[in-house]
Image (cartoon, rainbow, N blue to C red; front, side, top):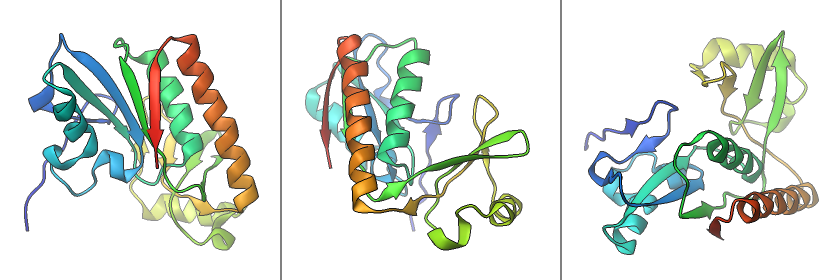
Length: 186
C-alpha cells in the first residue's frame, strides 16, 4: 500500500505544488473522480499528465469533484470563472456518466446539495433519509457555508439527455462570452 497525499487550495480543489508556475498558461480541468484523481498520486492524474504533455508553460487547475453530474460541473465552472483571479487559457471537461443527476433542497434554512450514489427510491423526497445521512456522514462546509452531501441518483435517459443539452449550451455561452476556448471528452 502506498500513501498518497493530496494538496488543496483554500476552496478544497486539488492543486499540484510541483507544477505551480505563476507566469504560465493556465488550463482549467473539470470532471468527476477521474479528474480529481481519487486514490492516485498527482503525476498520474489526467490534468497533470495533460499539462506535462502541453509543455512547461502550462499549469493545470483541477476542479474535479467525485460523484459529480454534468449539470453540477457546469455550475462549478460558472462559479470558478466568476471567482478566480486567474483566467484560463483553455478549459477541458471530462464528462461523467449521463445518468447521474443531482438534487438540491433544504433542511430547515440550510441549503443542501445532494450527490451520492444511493438507491434513488429510498432517498428522493424523504426528509428523514436526508437527515439520517447528515447524522451518519461527515460533510464539507463549502465557502458559502452550504452543506454538501455527495449523492447522485440515476435517472431516465430522456431526462439526462435534456439536462446535458441544456448544460452544454450553458457552458458554451459562458466560454463564448468570455472568449475562452474549451474542449470535452467522455
